Amino acid sequence: MTAYLSQHYDLVRPRAAPPLLVGMDAGLHGLSGWIRSGVGKRREQERLVDAVLVRQRALAAMVGERFAREQRTLMAQVRRASRHLPENRRLEGALALLLESARRTLGIIPDRGCVLGAFGLCTGYLVEMPEGDARDLAVAMAGVITAWDGKPCHVMALNDWLANRTVERFRPFYEMVGVDV
Image 1 (cartoon, rainbow, N blue to C red):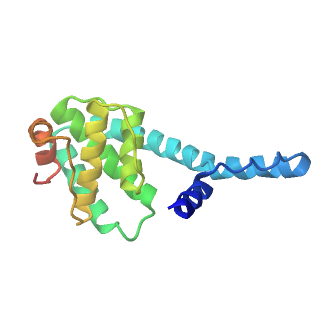
Image 2: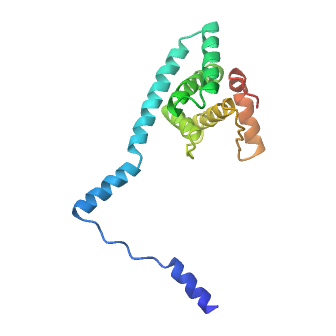
Image 3: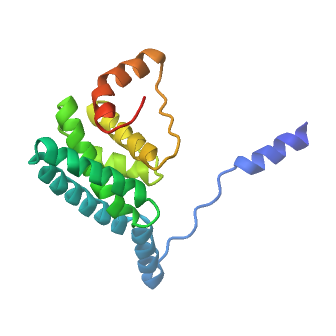
């Protein structure tokens, strides 16, 4: 028993901190940390959000049959382009269409965080967002895009009541974008 405890103690004993880097080593270490932090990715994501919001405003100006035609075109484009277009270009049109569909059916005016959250979920990231309409919409948009790609999608809620409430609240949105829930 004593040998086991000492072995365990060795595993969790804190190690001494590595020596601080100085000079050129410190500069290169800082640069590599900056690169690994994803600053370039964040700028790319901000550009995508701007492009999505501009495209969504253009869709908002369309009415009636013109919007329905554009909706069908974008939905078909997302389905066909899943393997041919770069991820950002494919998601730009889909997110813009879904934002405008949510505005028309639910009256939700999305913010930048909602678009970033949906983009992150669609590209395989775990996303932490505050509770509210933006989070629910981000999850719904990511689920719709996954469904359009022909992949199964399961969204889990804390309990049955929350799941049913969200499904019923978003039902007009899902119907408008052609997804069964």
